[in-house]
Image (cartoon, rainbow, N blue to C red; front, side, top):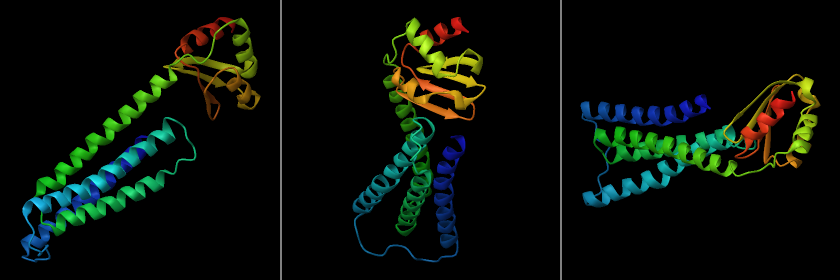
Length: 218
């Protein structure tokens, strides 16, 4: 996830910085390629704001949502490259508009800072909403459910470690092939994710209660 976030932030920074450097070179060498149509400054500003909002902000939100879907919500069909491609194209068009309209330097760097703030706020809001939804009670903990979870995880001997985080039960296993994912979902888990020999099941607000009950049986 950290790598994906870094790539998204670098795409914006590098493209905006390159166009700003081009602007400096053109200015220092008295090369004039700038927009010549006589329009009011207010209209020029409005055009730039529309381009920025319609392209940059929407593509930045798309990029942050894609990172969230892939790494937090575990929606494996998410195509991260598509969002990065859209972010790159939007950055190119927006930066070229800044260059063409001869905007001041603070437009370039102010835009980058605003996008970064928006990016991390959106990630936080996505994550916070996701956690609240997950923390609704999903599994009623009782002796029968606990035994069923143990059986679905391959038995006591298959469990190396057990913990919980927020609404998730986290299990490290000897042999992941012994796990019955469908059974775990049928017991009330709203999602089950596997990485290597580690498993996470979305239990809800009583994940800690279930973890404690299983620990007592080990």
